Length: 332
Ligand code: TYM
Image 1 (spheres, helix red, strand yellow):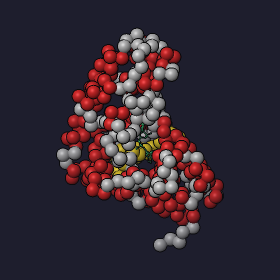
Image 2 (spheres, helix red, strand yellow; image 1 turned 90 degrees about the horizontal axis):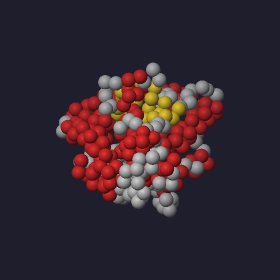
Image 3 (cartoon, rainbow, N blue to C red; image 1 turned 135 degrees about the vertical axis):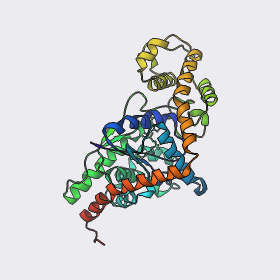
Image 4 (cartoon, rainbow, N blue to C red; image 1 turned 45 degrees about the vertical axis):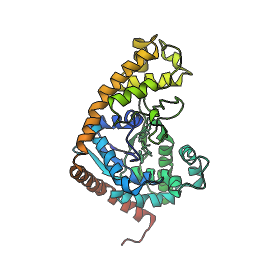
């Protein structure tokens, strides 16, 4: 079975973007891959996290992943800071990756914005830690949304340079899996911006914890244009908001934009938004309820995460110990 790794930051409740772009694609992979999924709190710390709520947020993200269908019997689910191999290998990768490579990372530029001098140095070396996450397990497939593509290319560059510099074939090439119509779900307020947990406006996103009423209200208020829906996908060009809503309905109903337009082409957005709301509520309500149920028992959740961390460490520790031997550290 091929080994799969992916991660998600506990910086808030997962959005519909996280769900359709990543989490939902992780669920079926549990049946035919050796899956390792991680709540990446070390990554979240690259921007300020209030210590009081940070642990609870991490637990909530784990509950959300379980509610979406991750099954600890079938995959390894754990918290990144519980497995020290990530930080150990990240340091080695900090010394392999070149500054020029990191300077090209568009996500750093977006996140740092005009405040480049004031952001943490962790935010800058973030992609090296991400490479370490994957390579600490010798994982070969990484299911993510479209925004992670450049980071995964960097992870391959780092592995290749490590192998070349030390004359080994130690880290394998990874294949990004960026799937389907929902690889990039856009903001409900601006169809040219990614839907994000960190957007200042809660109206820009659907959270997996939103109630039916909240979903209905957000979809009703979602930005659109005055034209009815086209009959064909070519009519969605230059209509980012229309394309986004059609893409979301296609993804949530396991269909394709062509089919959605075949059924709803010619309709105004009022009628279409009702159909979309109904589909979203039907799909997301059971997840919200299951998440609330799981969060009633912190003890059981934390025990599952401890077990996951033990399993993850059993895989990653020998791999990272071998990487440390390859670079020539004195064994203890
Ligand atoms: P994060 O926490 O920002 O997002 C988790 C996953 O959700 C996807 N995603 C989206 N997909 C479609 N449309 C959107 N609007 C959208 N927003 C987010 C992301 O692409 C991602 O797959 N750096 C990563 C976490 C990470 C990781 C890793 C991933 C750390 N180490 C190793 C893979 C492998 C991140 O910040 O994801």
